[in-house]
Length: 219
Image 1 (cartoon, rainbow, N blue to C red):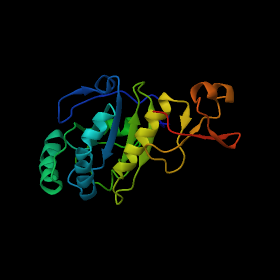
Image 2 (image 1 turned 180 degrees about the horizontal axis):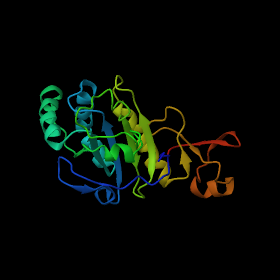
Image 3 (image 1 turned 90 degrees about the vertical axis):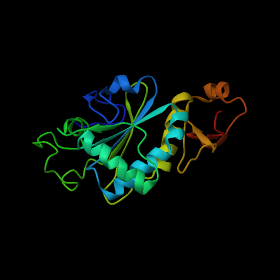
Image 4 (image 1 turned 90 degrees about the horizontal axis):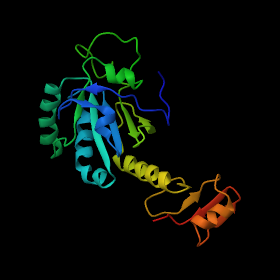
């Protein structure tokens, strides 16, 4: 199954480092970030799990839960967490899914469904496509997908920026322009007529083109 933005994120049950979960139930009524890793004890991912742990307060302020995934066992995850704490100064403070049967990776289209076997004997190279970030909304729909190669560490500041945009634009009839940051001007969506826009933005806006109306970020 190919996943796209606005598809319902597949539900599943899994063991994690914080106990068993059913994914949709675990998400609850907020946002969630699922970020995957091809293998435990890999260098780039070690830095990433530490970076995500340091940002925990930022995600909490945004009513967003974080969960990792790696195609190894919870015992391996817990051993890896000690390395992460030693080298990054902080241990993962969020659950990490044990996907030893490759079920979640296949469900989320990160491995082909005809891949056989379990995690045993597989390497980071054979799991190279398991490097995706999914942002999932309270409606359980996929809002964003970012896939990285193994050699490129993920930019978690960008993930936060994108999450801010997703949450802002879900609440207001606006879109965010290129390189937008929190507090910057935004764009009134074309689907909103000028008459409707006047009700929402009584202080007006700047019209660059009929389809490009710039307004200060709603608060």
